Length: 252
Ligand code: GUN
Image 1 (cartoon, protein in one colour):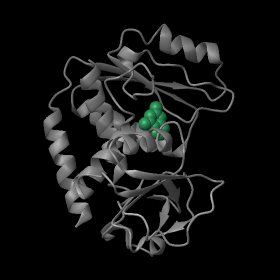
Image 2 (cartoon, helix red, strand yellow):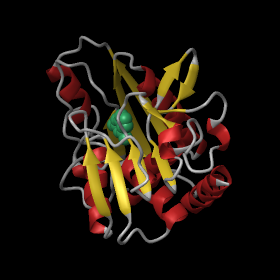
Image 3 (tube, protein in one colour):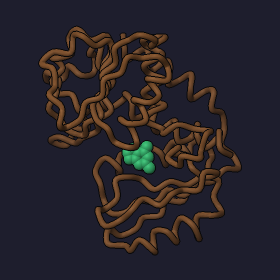
């Protein structure tokens, strides 16, 4: 079962990680975004469990760019790592985290780590599908933090990659693909469309009627034991969270 394989992979990566004793991290959030709140809560829980010193800096949604920059470049210098949880309110630009502190792998001069969700997708894909050379991979979404860098990494690994975005005409069925990654941030795809795809990686995180769910719409209560679609929760998200800790270890 897919869920069992993911559980095993998670346990293995967690055990390999060991302790983060002696490290520290500043996590900056601005305003309240539903998905961000879920992610940040889980990141803090894991990092503290691993004995990392965590400072969560919560800033008001109407904060100025200068204040946000000061929080990173002045007050953030003392930490082993730091990140600003995205998305930010529209009037703000994401500060470039110095490469030596960049646990997100967003700074282009940081050659040590990949963005946490990209690494999570690659690890899941390779665990379930093995070598992706010559495999047909569809990646939906072209964000700077998931879709775009994942396309590049999959091409580097020899995959045949198709990229879809909100302007694309989507196929009705995805039978031509071995692997589909959904990072659209919207819920319009149904599990039925992917019946003949080996592996679907659902990167989405939404809250519907009080319940956390992914991009893919499942028949009621089927998502937890779908044979080919990673579940939400207990799918990509927890690997993304784990990768903050793994990346912190790699950059320290
Ligand atoms: N928002 C969604 N995913 C991420 C991530 O990996 N890092 C940050 N900083 N913000 C995010």
